[in-house]
Length: 370
Image (cartoon, rainbow, N blue to C red; front, side, top):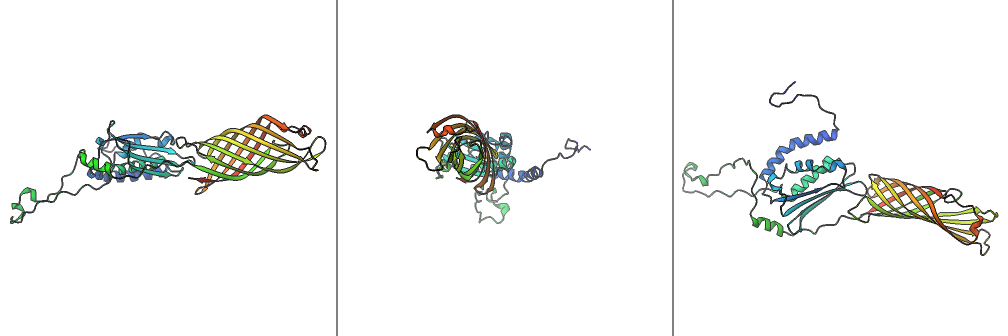
C-alpha cells in the first residue's frame, strides 16, 4: 500500500528493542515542542563544539546523533568553528564500566563559565546518554531560559476607543517567529562572562581496597590456602582503564618433611605487583610476584633455619561484579612462572624443588573509594 503525499511503502516495522522504540517515540512527540521553545529562547553567542567520546563504548561515540539532538534546542547559526567560546563535551568510561559525561562551557581565555557532570550505570543505553548529554549542553548555553518580556505599550488616556489610538499603543499578538534571534549585544556577553562560576572540579581518581582468600598449588609440593589483601589504584584519570594493583597473602604454617626425614615448619608469603587493563567487568593483568619461604626445624634445633626468595612472572585474569553501592566481588585466576630464586642457609638442599609453574585462584570483596 502506498501512502499518498508521503512517498514510501509500508513494509512492516523492523524488530527493535522496546527501549529504543520507547525512546524514539518520546523524542518524536517532544521535538516540535522543544524546537518551538528553542526559537523563543534568548539569543546565544557563537560557540564552538568540541565533542570527544573515544574512551566511551562505540555506540556512544556518535557525534552525528549528538549534533542532531543538540540542534533541537540550539539554533544552527550558533555553531561556529572559529568561535571564541567553546562547549567541551567528554563521554568516557569509568574503571567500573559506568559512563561518565563532562560538559564544560569556557570563554576565549579558557575560563570555565559553566559545567555539568553526570554518571550513568554501565547498563544504560548510549542513546539515553547522548540525549541527556545534549540536553545538559543546551541548558548550559541558556537554551531553556525564558525570553525577556515584551516592552509595554504606551497608554493613550485621551483616545475614546482603541480604534482611535496610535498603532503603537494597541497591544498586538507577537508574530510567529520563523528565524532564530540574532547575536546578543556585547554587553550581555560581558555580563554573562562576569558572573561568578564555581571552580572546575577534577574527576576523582579511584582507589579500591580488597580482602579475601587465596588458594594456590605449585608454590609448594601440596596445595595451600590463606588470607589475601590488596589495593587497586587508578594513577591517571586520563587513562581510567589502566590500574596498578599491589597485594599479598600469608599462607599459614605447614608441616614439611625433608629428604632427611627431618620435620620443618614452613611459612610462605607471596607478594604481587601488577598492571591491569579493565574492560567492562573483566580485567587482564601482568606483573611480578615475589615469594618468601621461611623454614624452621620443628624440633627447635639451632642453626637449621633456611630462607628462600623467588621471583616469578604473573599472568592474571579476573572478573568483578557490583553488589551494592561501592561494594563489589572479584574472582581472579593466577599463573606464576618462576625465573629466579636465591637460598639463604643450607637446609633447603634437603627439600625437593617446587614446580616452576604455580596456579592460584583468589576470591575477594572490594570496597571502592572516590
